Image (tube, rainbow, N blue to C red; front, side, top):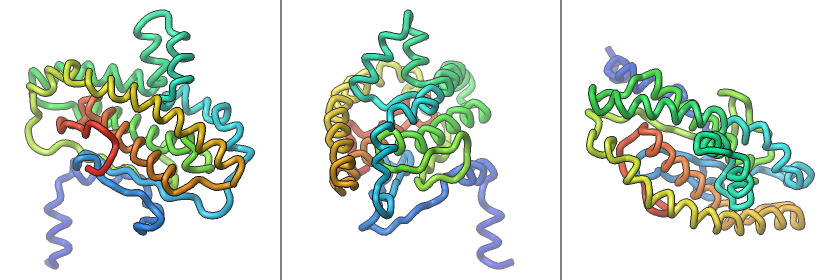
Length: 253
């Protein structure tokens, strides 16, 4: 048996299944793509689009992105956050508005998983998969919402020119971190709110820049990519998919 065959046989089925769910890889050269891991928790990358931007779809982007906002939630921009808070008559409605329909389902799965991890030390594979589905979808929708790409995101797992890779945790779960997850999340939520204000200003500049010049500057593109990667890392932690602490701010892991 060859070395390649030996490596293939030794791969665990659980890890192999998660790897198949990773997004198709787009351009990956260092000059074209901002890529980084988030403290080893996940990988996200989105290459700048080739050619001129579609200014018409950029102008109407909030309206065009509405179906995906309903399904997987909006980015943490200040105007959207204020409007969505106003639509919720109670906490559950507000959570659904922020996270979308799939996000609300993923939140319920995380609540059930909280009990199973604490008492059994295991995250049910089906519940982990539902959380992963939500994040895969959101990893394709956010680059469109935040003006990184002009291609319309698919409704499901069809290819899209971004890469998202999140693997199941290896070894036993950290029950202490799981049990205290809500308390641990408080400073991250505070930082997410503050940086959401920064993102709001950045997105206004990006929107005007594309409309006027037809392109997004590399600096703005890199900031948005890093913010999306960081937010996905936070959501991975909030949904109990991994136990590693996310970084406190967007940046290199």
